Length: 343
Image (tube, rainbow, N blue to C red):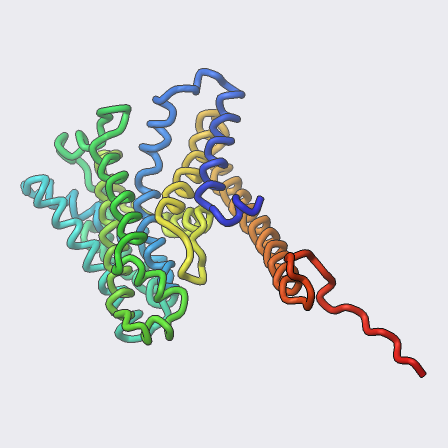
């Protein structure tokens, strides 16, 4: 139990395996790579958003505008393609749009010192309104086959965009764990004052987190447009809360400084897996959010209780080790009773 508590990635992975085993037990026909490929394809958008949200949350901030950034970037790639621009130019345009949106969020938080939740709530409506003004409230349709082909399955049922998602997760996880730039994210989120004293570029790190979050949201918008083949006027609505939930399920702390991108990826996969299981069993769509929310609350409550129990156990060990005469590390009463004084 302690191992599962300390290694949230392992906990999320075991939850995925358990849910898949339940699915196969109820219907053995779902035991196939095709089922896993279908779940992964459905989870790619949420995985990208969870990766970006994790970067921001590691610095002890939060961004609730990424859903609107997804819609804005999807509109950007669709409009560029429909106006005759090539696919590479359209993709670069969408990525630039996402980077600009993320950098603007960072400027509000870092430069103007507006609390992240307040700033991104404002840009949530700003970006959504900009998207509707840009399109006049209409859908973007008639996207070319070159974009849709990016979501077509290739090796092991994984599309080119799916391979890009896995590559981004791998590069991001390596960067956070193996480079000084990546460790700065943890330092800023863990102790801001100490990070400043150690010479960490705090403002630059937080700006990088918001900007990269915007770029990953733009990638999610491109994946959305490629998979769906059109862009509705409400694209991305509600995705920001799912991204934060995926991070929490994967072990990213809301207090910053704790968690990994692999955990965020697994949390996003697990949430999507829940939705897919409900679809496969033809349950009404309104059950999706209810059950996903119930699972998230259950994980949070269980995690909180386990952390309290572990903290109590560690305190007891700490007191026992420092008791006089306890050379072997055996448990003794932290505060032994006093002997009665002789009258």
